[in-house]
Image (tube, rainbow, N blue to C red):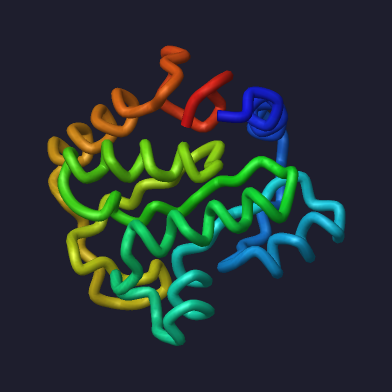
Length: 161
């Protein structure tokens, strides 16, 4: 993990702060986002699916494809990166792997959705959510999987996803 970028992200997420997070699906728009002066980039699951596969965001993107895009974006920009990790690509065990892979690729934070699989992009109809207890297991797995254990379960953590 990149501690200076984590601290920058933590400052952006301070209570009362408002931050625009433009979405990128690959390294080129991430570079445009950085050049335009934004302070962070959001790796959008929809953007990755749209740009990489030419398909809507309906759960077709794999974790390895997402990791490749995050790594390329990390190489292209020196901004905090928040990654849409969809549903974590499976159950709580998969969520742990997802967090470790995205952290290794350069993510500073991840966002997990509580949808059933196959997931659907947020603006599509026909979405269902998993039981709260299952989502709690996924969140615990995500927290446990971080390389650094700052004691917080949010992207505002000092040295962790």
